[in-house]
Figure 1 (cartoon, one colour):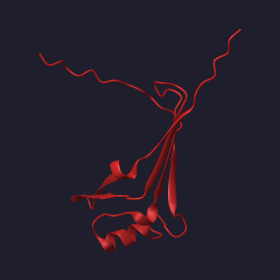
Figure 2 (cartoon, rainbow, N blue to C red):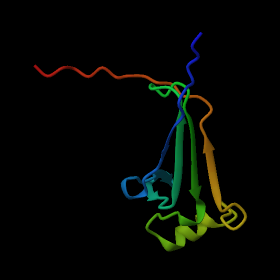
Figure 3 (cartoon, rainbow, N blue to C red):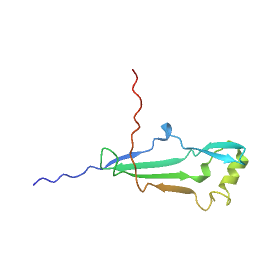
Figure 4 (cartoon, helix red, strand yellow):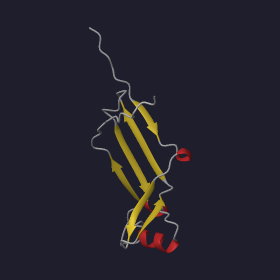
Length: 107
């Protein structure tokens, strides 16, 4: 009897080729965009199709950059991220749905 052992494959985010952006509605008048320059992410899977993948993303809240120092300080405050108390926020993927969008073929 032969037993196959799954191989765990790991990926980490390459910060020089990655960016985490956000866009939020401000006062129902305009959109505010920004970034979180300090983000770490890792993906681990034993399957080729990522159906069993685990994904974790950690964002350093004090690095928020909306292009306005005053707004960034407000976002770091107790009103939003509480960056001193919570220096990072972490997202852990609980499930992954894989779908493929069929694009029209060029003729």
